[in-house]
Image (tube, rainbow, N blue to C red; front, side, top):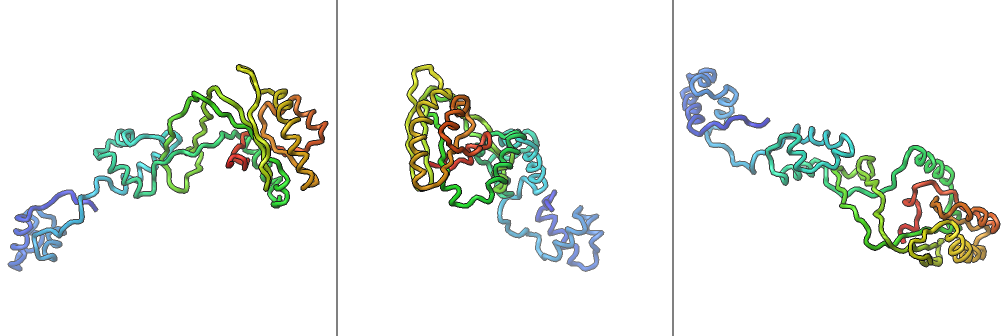
Length: 284
């Protein structure tokens, strides 16, 4: 319990002197000095009016204060991103920001950069769960025959987002309120395509397009699907009976590309939407 009053050495000395006579009860000492009976009893037990040396300044934030602050921080995605200044104003705290930060850190709440992940609506979540259940029994030999592909934009003058910081504990890294769902910045640049499978790095290269030209399904079919991807896919038959091509759900992979794959007899992996984080090519 935090003390609300500090008694002077003189007052404590009076209490000790009165008790030393042996005739004055603690109740009377309280009436004479104003010191509570329990405090006078403690002073008498210590036998001195001098306080014990203290290890440091008394805490300005109680455990109750920190408990309320943490409950507030965990309200939603906005309170997860509140500043220390905002917390001081919200709770009318007369403490330095470093003091508040230290108290939260000691309670296991830290200021961390939010993990970037694609936003998944209810339909996307169901598709990802369906994909996981369908492939939960796949062995290494099954995944070895998959050709993973992806495109990456190399952009200039890209609009960058400020770092997104959130208050969280170690176990809340992927809590829905602690995720940064912001899409990548836009800008002018080049589009690179690449592929690989287990033990084999595939071809890669930039799309050849004119200024202001977009990459549609016809461009993808002519420059990638019927070119380097087809060649890499055909080479895989030397090692696997039925190689499988993985492509995401980008619009360029649809329309004219669908009949082109059917004509080739190319088997594809039904990929869940908004799931770049599942593609191992992201680690290359």
